[in-house]
View 1 (cartoon, rainbow, N blue to C red):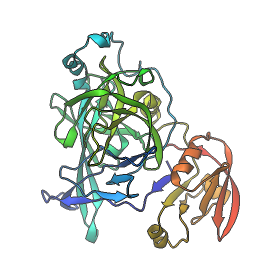
View 2: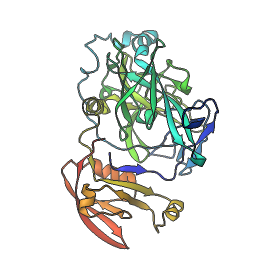
View 3: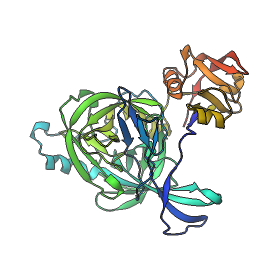
View 4: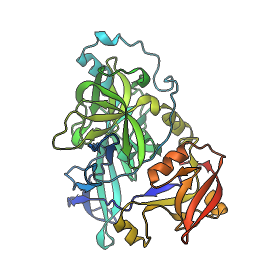
Length: 405
């Protein structure tokens, strides 16, 4: 997707672990690539339980009381429900009230995989380093398709998948969508145990929930249980508001991309976040499965999620005085960092340095508001965009095209 958010406030933190040399790689480091979330209704901090490094990372504070994070990226997309027929053959599930926890585990544990990633990153003195991460995934077809979180595999140069039986495969990235934090992988395997997709719209508060994942990046197949604590929790993930399931099943770093199952052993959510705070316990979050079914289908078919709009610009969200000074602008807000040649933005006359203050009639003062306004538009629609250039407001009409990646 060409509309790319660059959060200049955050940095990648990692600790050294000199273990091996690889070609142009001079040292090896591990990293925590957890992303930050915050609950909109209050100041509770939560952490993305994403791909993690194998040593502890450096946690820093952003937005003071509302967020503790280690890195991030994300977006917003409207996802609708589709049939589950594409993911698993018809299976007669026992009545959920008759299943014991061991029976549920027996139905589901072979559908959850461990994911390990390697990413080459540029360090100081023009050195390149290998950053290792870990997360979880869920098998969605017997021929090797796997769903996980985008942040688990984002920018990875190598993705390895380990099955419950110990077999390992190098995975191919089929496609990803930062807005919904979903990615689809493919391994060369047959006869796998695919998860049976449930209906997250039918969940009720208090219903049984079971989480399976790879906490700490080294405890694959870990099972924790609890209940559905709340539905439709509004959580802000890197400038994107998401409606998530809340559960008290224990969720830890490395669980991201793993499965949240109901009492019938059906997949009802993709684990994505946990609480953070010295006095906070029992708060975990998952993306409702109905919100990602279309996303999965589109990625498998087209390699991207269809129907999302773009302008053809790269943006910077300048939210503090320090960043404003660094970019030599006199106010915070959303600025155009670059314009793609030949794009709709280019044809409309938008330029680098323009500050976006209104989009399609919606006042814009943050990137999250712009993304939300764009998510309500359709491909082929022409909208007004108001920018400040050289101290004056200017209005442009821009034709929205489809983002294809």
